[in-house]
Structures are given as structure tokens and as C-alpha cells.
Image (tube, rainbow, N blue to C red):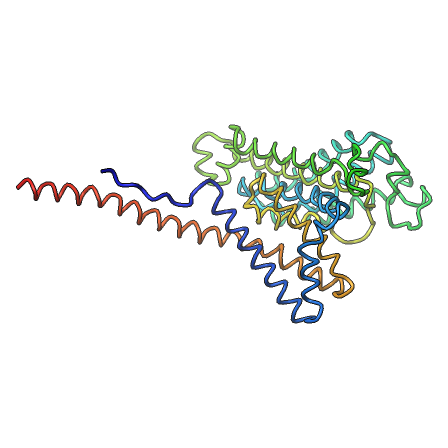
Length: 385
């Protein structure tokens, strides 16, 4: 009678999902403990607000989707580079340049939204090419060059906008000189279409940006998983010398990987500012959206489809954090949110531990399965003799 083999919990991506869920759980528990330490009387209500606000109303859920769209794109920017063996910490600069390109196209040249979004893609891709070239041609670490280009990009954008009078809020009757013009007044055709979703969800935050971001995530997944080009990119990331031996151009793929990563980040900037709810501020500070793409990518183990869900989670926590005021000041909320999302870095370590444990269990099961036929043959030989 044949022996039934025991099936193990092993399907593609299960370990990564479990590792991410464990990281999220630990992060939320840490947040609750911190709230109790800081203000025990208000901790319970604040924590409930943190984890439930995003679903309490259609307006709050619309804000979650609105904030998730650029997070998906910056997460794709970082995750795509991770998949090819590169660390793109320059997503903030690429995001900024892409946002500026979109806004200049919208306000200075009065272009429609889809052309502005294309300009954002080109701007981000252009800013991503420089770290790629330095890495490919001179073997300069991409972390160093991308950090430098973050600051170069931010100051270059501020200088450009300051010298384009139409870009300043004063031109459109705005109250502050340090903000770009109100897009809804400057060029309504540059706003990302809402297709009635804002009326349906009773929120000005709702538009089609999240769906555009999802389409880009699917494109990234297809490139990496279903094309020869994606295989070559990942091969260079796994082992550059082996890919060279196989005839793959490592230098070309490094540059292309950074260009594509920059393009994703640039589109993220375009999606955020073309929504019409935010205005670019001329300050000497890097935009945090690019850096938030790092924990989004880590939480999803750089899987493009997983990045959609991790971006939604991070956005959800941010909306919930806003609802914790006035019991907790904004700085405390920022600390809690930062701890939760940056704890996602441990998802990689957790995944490794779970993978090793699963491999050991599989080896034990295989050894036991191999031992059964041997024992059966031995028994037959004894009975025959």
C-alpha cells in the first residue's frame, strides 16, 4: 500500500508574505506599547483610531488610495533596483525632478495631464541615468551618487521654479510665495481625471492615480518575471561575473535598471502633484515620499504586486496616525509610523529564518520518505531468506 506523503505549507511567496505579516504585527505591538508609555489613558482609543480610521468613511479610504499611489511608484523604483542588485536610494531626487517636470508642463506650458505624466516619467528616468552611468563605467557605489543627486535635484528644481514666474503662487493670487501655483486654477486640464470617483466616495482626494500606479506595477512584474530582458537584469543582480560569462552586457543593464527605477519614481511625483491636492513647496528639504519607498519595497520583498499592498498598508497607517491627534502630538505620531514602516526591513531577516526552517523540515521529510523503501526492501529480503 503506497505511503501518503505529508504536504508542507510551501507555495510561491508564502514565506515572504508570512515574514511581512510578522513584521507588521511586531511593529503594531511596539506602537501600542509606546502609546501606553506616553499616555496610558488615551492609548487605547488612539490605537483603535490608528488601525480603523482608514475604513471608517469613504473620505478616509479615498485619502488612503490617494497617498498610496505615489508610494506604489517609489516602492517600485526601489524594488526594481533591488531585484537587479542595485540600491536606488535616489528615489527622492528622481521623484522631485519628475514632479517638477510635470508641474512645469502643466503650468508653464499648459499641457494636458497625460503629457505632463509622460514628462514626469522622462524627468525621473533622466535623473536616474547618472547613478547608473557612474556605477557601470566607474564602479562608483550607486548609494553615494544617488544621495548626492537627491540634493542636486532638489536645489536644481527650486532654482528652476524660482525663475519661472508662472510657477509661483503669486502669479495666480496665492497667499504664499514659497509654493507653486494652484494647479486647479492654473490648468484644470492638467488634473488627473477623477471619472466621477470623487462624487462616488464624497472626497476630493479620489482620482484615478491609484489605478495608474497599479498598471505600472503590473508592467514591472511582467518585465521582471515574463521577459528575457527582465531575466538578464536579475541575472546581473545575482551574479555580475556569471552574467558577463553568459554574454549579458552588465554595464548596459545597470544603466537601464537605474533609468527604469528613476522613471517609476518620477511618475510617482507626477501622480501626487497632478492630483491637485498638494502644492510643491520651495524649501531646503528632501521630499520624504522617495525614502518611504524603501520600507514599502522591503515589506513586499521587492515583488511588484506585493508593493501595491504594502503601499496601501503604509498609507493606511499614515491616515490612522493623523486621526490620533490631539491626544498625541504630531511628532509622536511620526515616530510610531516610522517605527512601524521601517521595521519592515526585518522582513528580509525573518524571511531568511523561515526559509531555512522550511528547508530543514523538507530535508527531514525527504530523508524519512527515502528511508521507508529501504526498510521495506530489507524486510522483504529477510522474509525470503
